[in-house]
Length: 104
Image (cartoon, rainbow, N blue to C red):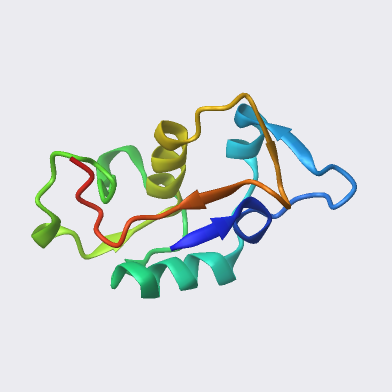
């Protein structure tokens, strides 16, 4: 599933360019999270995971058969590993999300 960054993040339309660090601090749009949940066939759990209750949905070593849900923390962790440039344009740059969370 391909998603343009502007479809993923809540951002100020007057500021189309963000650094990777600033991008990862933005909140994510609920419509995107629901679309990703349908794409992955997983339950989206709204809210931040606590330290003792982390969901490792995007961890490469986890057997995908055990994954049933994901959170915003999982998506940000995935994006942190995936995004390699230092600056991103909200209307032009996109991310490709795999169908399976098993990324090895």
